Length: 92
Image (cartoon, rainbow, N blue to C red; front, top):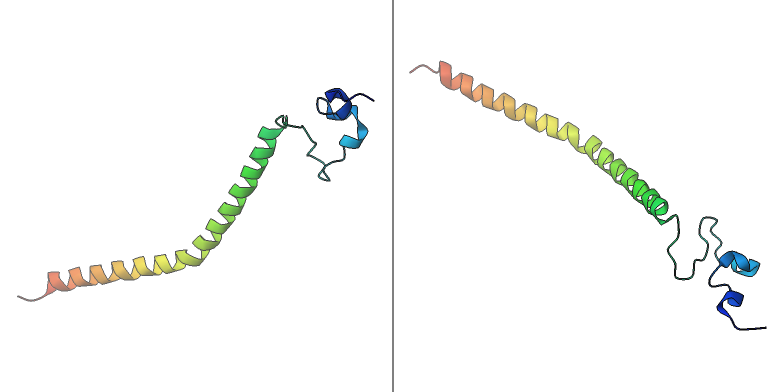
């Protein structure tokens, strides 16, 4: 047996079957210093998942806070209009 890098399997992970099952995740295979050929798709999948999670958190926060904001705006508008009407029709 020689100690060539090809014999170890670093140049082509598919060359030796024992190197194929290093990772238990189906979509990840060892590339020994190389970038995963699907790194953009994998990164985009993670970013999409994070974006969906953030949108869900924002939607929950909006559902909790929006009624309070509407109530505050409505009461504030009503108070301002009442004050303006009272000042306009106040007898001098």
